[in-house]
Amino acid sequence: TFYSGDSLKNSACYGNNGLRNYDANENDMIAAMHMNELELCFECIEIRNPANNKNIIVKVIDKCAGCPPDGNNVDLTPFAFKQLADINLGRVNIEWRPLDKCP
Image (cartoon, rainbow, N blue to C red; front, side, top):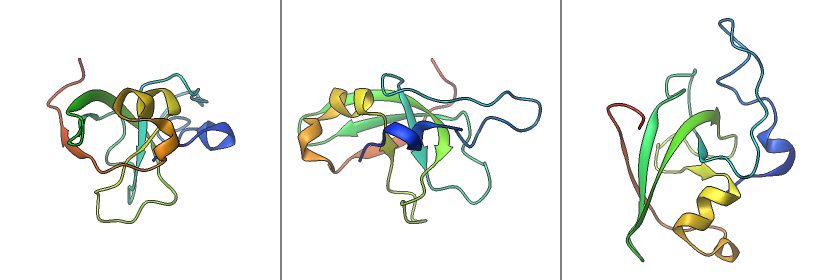
């Protein structure tokens, strides 16, 4: 899925441990995922849409409020979502994997 508007404000991975607050924008290549704490903050993941074989890399910077704790759901900015699928679909099946480091 994707998230936009006020949901992009005050990304959970910022504003603590001396980091300034950060409001993401709809053109960032970022993601939100379910987190118990902030364990996935600043991790990069590669996401693939198996329906069309398109891939993107995004950085996790926020908690996904509506994502179940199974770890299979990723919320993207509209720009990132459009790189994988038609935004009018709203939700697509994906595969993702963590990267050792961000490019």
